Length: 106
Image (cartoon, rainbow, N blue to C red):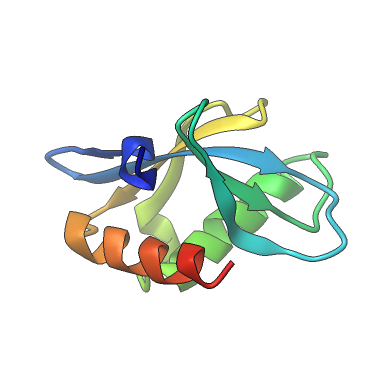
């Protein structure tokens, strides 16, 4: 199974399904891939309090995929560890190549 199972192409961009581990000592985006849940693993340093974790995810995805933070939105799981993140205007092959590079470095 490939990490591409965690991605969905849409007319507006790409949806990335993730599983978040907040409060990690070291931030890793991506932190791995869970083939059973079909989700990219994220390890973030912020706690899941008052939207801090979601804000860190949005900022980190904006940097990682080189798109404005306004184009990154959490469309599912705002209060859950399992989230769906929409990257508006992102090219599917660009998202795959970035994730492939970062996941192969783990």
